[in-house]
Amino acid sequence: MAATSPRKRTTARTTPAVAPSSLNLAAFEQLRERARATPYRLTQATEQPFIVPGIEPPIEAHWPKTLEGREEFHEAARAMNFFGMARAVLSPADYPRVLKAFDQFDDSGELLIGLTMAIIDHFNGPSAGDAPGGSTPS
Picture 1: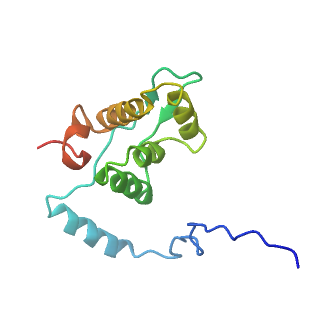
Picture 2: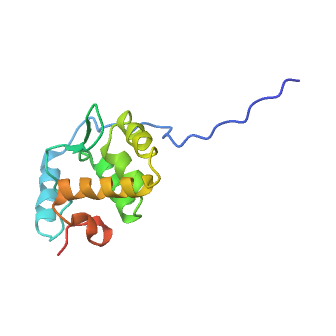
Picture 3: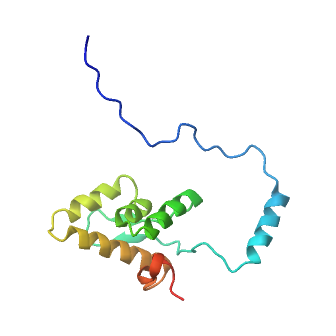
């Protein structure tokens, strides 16, 4: 009997997220009105991409446009997971390019932290990354 290789565990969803086939726009307007009555807002970021310095060809970081992408970034920020924050704003092709470029140096971790903080400052304003939880300071 031939030996079998161990199954690899995946973290992908078994059922892909599907947009609803019909939307109740009037109900959505009620949700908007309810949200506007609160002081809460999700982070609004500049639309301009951040250009990662020192790497050619250039690498652009983009603020997540979907709620799922924004949640991924905010969860990483809450945990101070610099890898997760960088992964959330870099393309799947560019993320490993950044890591490989930084790995050439003994202080690669500091480079990743510095890059992540510069990205947060670019998208959310100067020193935004220095506030607890990575939010805009009060």
